Length: 181
Image (cartoon, rainbow, N blue to C red; front, top):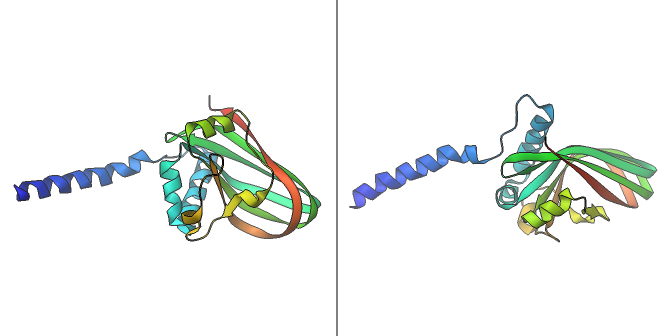
């Protein structure tokens, strides 16, 4: 009896291991934006492997693979991204930010917004998500995701790509959403 269970369990584990990659979102290789999003996802998982739990257990997520930010007292940021839920691209999103205060420099980063449940995701799609300050974003680093939880149904991570910015400014992020046709 024990001998029969071991091969069956091994077969089940092997089958699950082979289908696991099929369960994750796969980009359309002819779409440059989807490839940029996939690259950003791979990079943040390399920086903090624990973030995989957010990808696996969230109702969906928005990925902005390249947000450009610059300021000389008055500043701004802009990025385009995708909203992914149920392992499919559901739509397109933009991030805009304006700030005023002590700020100088420029930087580039990727931003990830995870939605705890479908309510938070639908709230984002309706345009009801705004961040008053960037203090809500967690900078990606090894283990950072382990100490991060959802706040009002969202968790936000950034992964710096380059640049240097000195900032003591007040501003906020706004988002738009367009469903995929």
